[in-house]
Length: 150
Image (cartoon, rainbow, N blue to C red; front, side):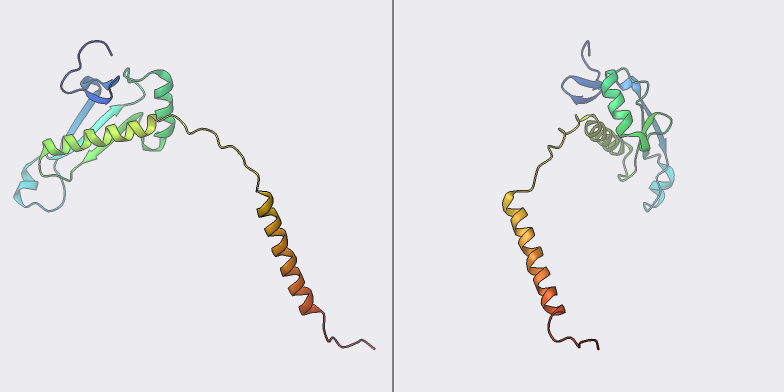
């Protein structure tokens, strides 16, 4: 990104920064215990980040994030809600932290493809020997004193 980052910008990595202008905030009253405080303070925070329209990510990174976060998206936006703290400021920080963690996980490169392996010669031999032993046990059960048909 060109220029110095603003204080409100979210830094994912040293080179990857989400501008504060691309983040939208919504505030509402939090639910749960808290007495009078909870009834008078808009401490619940919703952080919205429009992943489809962001200019902070290159096209391949944006596509990877859209694929991985598909079920979580609401109209192309990532929505993070935080209401665990009494303070709106602490909830804002928690929401930002969760957004960064979520995006970093979604932007990770895919793992290398699995190299198929063969069973070792010893494991094949052990499996076959176990099958032969089991077969011999069952044959011994079948054999023995059986009445002859007249």
